[in-house]
Length: 82
Image 1 (tube, one colour):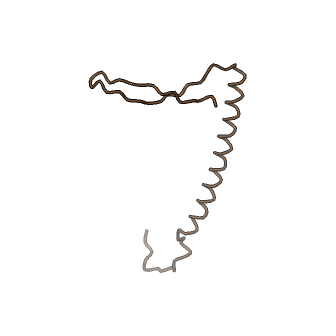
Image 2: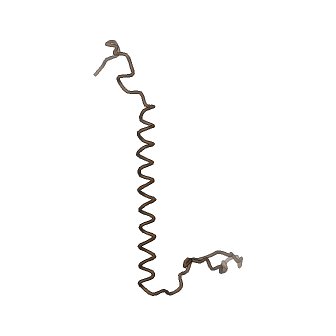
Image 3: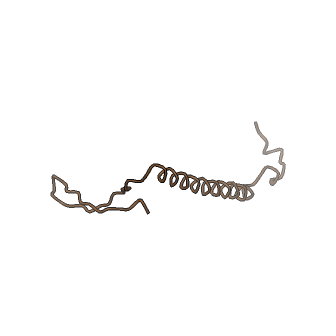
């Protein structure tokens, strides 16, 4: 994998405390390899996004069936206004 986490230390000037943290780095790769990897990653993200959008649409339809509609209530003239 090209995105590794490399630990390094940060020192706060005011408190002189050391925080260990990580930063991502990528080794130098030929442009074609990076481009290919980015294309593959983009395609994977697009596929997952499409799947999530389909699931959200289905969930929206299912949830809408639980919301009462006007046809679910009796027509009462004394409650009519506007």
